Amino acid sequence: MKPPREPELELRGRLIRSLGSLREMLPGSFVERQRACGRPNCHCADGKRLHSQYQISVLMDGKPKALNIPAELAEKVRQKIEMRRRFDAAAATICGVNLKRFLKEKEDRQV
Ligand SMILES: [Zn+2]
Image (cartoon, rainbow, N blue to C red; front, side):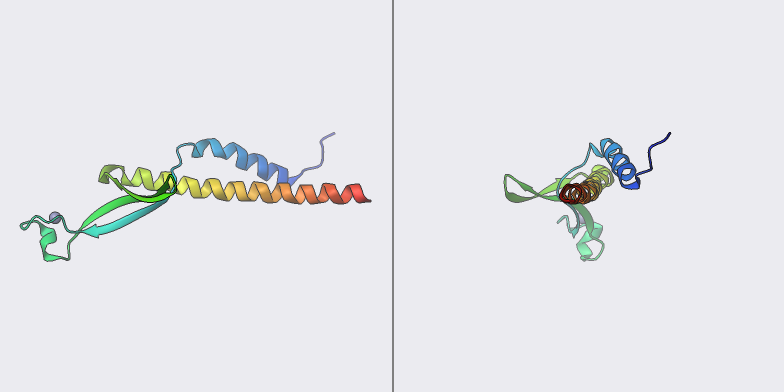
């Protein structure tokens, strides 16, 4: 006989198993800024067609830092920072499931 389905436990298991794919996650937020490079004959000298500059804005040892990201790594880094958001969302859902189960267990004892 199969035990009754517990959708929340299935969800929790699915989320836990998905965390491995997020192991390359990076902290902080992804920032894209526009800037002029300063070369007088560059297209950016008109002040309109500026260069994109990519940064990770992150706390290091409690201090805010803006770390430059080479343009060719920008998309990869953006995805890794997004992984952290998904990791946090999964952790929040798992904690929510566990909190509900804790409250249920506590209630069951009091009967
Ligand atoms: Zn330029």
